Image (cartoon, one colour):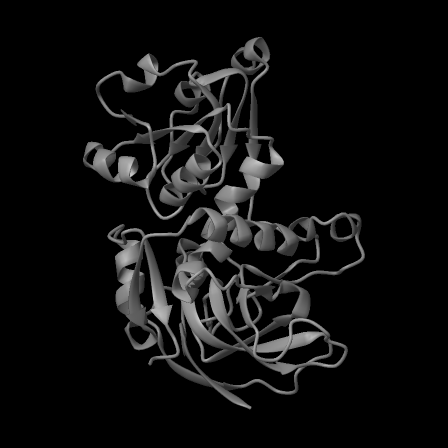
Length: 337
């Protein structure tokens, strides 16, 4: 079967039309007709080969929503016709300690949706059946797409690191990840403080659910907020003054890094020891956690702010993300109506 897509033919080049032969559907896999695909900044890192793992032609896209149109041998669920979502991960070994305990995203043999495989900037995509997660009917498919990577990236640490309604949660960076982190933390019942270098985002942060807003540049806002946050999630891609952010934490507080900021994270040991504070990282989530996150989002009306463009305008969407002009997630309509 031939599949139509848009691909990068070399690093940092504009995407162009691409057709490839998919071959037979493997046992245990499903084929999904793509309706929508989110544009994540990780797609740009892959297109530009920033991580040194890309091969070309490269079809990016890992925030995929579509309909199951074919089943490989031994697939029981999902059923034909089901609307499903596929995130960053398309498969795992299924037998290591992490897979067996429900942390498939930590599997050392994890298989990425668009690394070594063609992703969702295409009419169809394939993955292991376990990684095609049902989309709740209450979620509009275009809204669900960014949740499959961006959403679970900020939801997972709230769950896994024990955030509770009584906690104060800080969110660093009000962008594609940050605005979702605010919405999820508010839905958890937490008091939410947004930290941003852009004072003009104060009104938008409040609209997303932030109770408080702190400007991080020039007015001593970080010092005034010291010792006020139980859980601090950094979605920023810029290098930060980490000691200033650790100082925001209350005793037993945690700084969780989900944004790929450059450079080392350097803080004094004393700053961690005296308040029993910690610094942790987190990446995506397992299929069961993605299913839980989607259900939570549907019940609590946690959705991204999106702009939809047709797949043929994929380069315009990528340009917006590169220039930090997306407000706040770009979504490609692959199956135009």
